Structure formats: C-alpha cells, structure tokens
Length: 269
Picture (tube, helix red, strand yellow):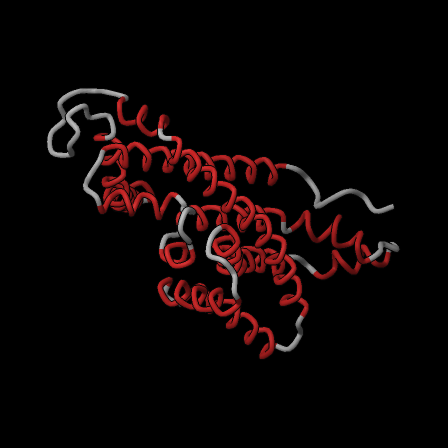
C-alpha cells in the first residue's frame, strides 16, 4: 500500500520540481552556447564565463552585493533574535499578536510600495542613495524574516530548562548564552541564510534605493537585459544560482551536524 500510494506522490513532486527548475536548466544549458543566442545550440564554449570574469565593473558589483548581503544578514540576525526573544517573553496574547502583525507588515507588503517608501524616507532624511541606503533597507526587510525563523524554536523550548538553569544558580546572561541560544541555533542559522538569500535576490526595493555609481547584481542584470539578450547574463545567473545552491547545501550540512550533537550547551558551573 505504501509503495502504491507513494508512486503518484513522487511522480507529482518530480513534475513540480521539473517545472520549477526547467527554466534554470535552460538558462544554464545555453550559457555554454558558442552561437550567442538561445535559439539553437551551435557548440560548447566558456566564452561567456570568461567575459563575466574579465569584467572589472561586474566584479565590483558582485563585491557590493556580497558585502551588502553579509552585513545586512548579520545585523538583521542580531536584531531579529533580540526581537524574537522580546516577543516570546510577552505573556498577553493580544500584545504578542499585535507585535507579530507589525513584524509581518514588511513581509506581506508589495516590494514596490516598500521601495518607494524607503526612497521617500531617505530623501526626507537627507541620506544619500548608495551603500548606506541599500544596507538600511535590506536590514529593515530582513529582520521580520529572522524573527519568523527564530520564534518557532523559542516556542518549542520548554520553560523548565530555563527554570532548572536558574535553580542551579546561573545568571541571566549564562542562561541566554548556554541554554537559550544553543537551543535556537538552527533557527538563527535559518534566519541568517534566509536573510542572506533575500538580500542577494532582492530587486524591487534595491532598484528604488540605489544611487548613481552604485549597483547590485539584481539591478545590473535587469539593466543588461534591457539592452538585449546576452549569454553573459546566462553565465552570470548560473554562477549566482550555483552560489546560492552551495549556501543551501552548506546550511543543510551544518544543521544536520548540529542536530547530531547531544545536549543544548555547556554544563552549568
């Protein structure tokens, strides 16, 4: 029975993943086409990848994107964990739900509205559009994501763990660093990598808050695509996809290794 019921489900999942990944595989396949178009494969070449690696301006843009993504992910993870801890400590259900609603506003709001709002805010505040404006906007929309990743882990933690640590004489900082944070570590890593991928992938918000002379990969790919189809875009997009895939696999391996370790932290003094 189990194998019979599992076969249609597996076939359905295969079709779904095939539909989702077919455009990416199509893009990847033609990134090696020597013909220069996406209509017919004429031969195998690394010409378009060489063009990407020889583009100095593109290298600077990649560096900008990675720096923005790492900084925004790290800062938003810090504030997101603090926000999740604060929300989890609220006892009144109405107040907790109100804060969660405020937290989710940036997630459910359209990116165009968020980008335009940030543009107006930075213009009124006198903040020059560029690195700072992009970083602040990415931190702002990444914090709610981290909160949503961390909060379920906090709710899974039994209050008796904290009570036992306090009964044994542990200070508040020791309880946080040796009991709470090790327990929610998978959620913290999930929030960090989600914020990292969202930052690297974002286009709509970044498009509004970038200034002259500063750009990220998503904005650059859009600008190049407007001038016509070039297989260097395929090569660049393939590299971004492989990098993102490596991040996901790395997170999976780290999470799997962390789940194999016994206990939640170091023994109490």
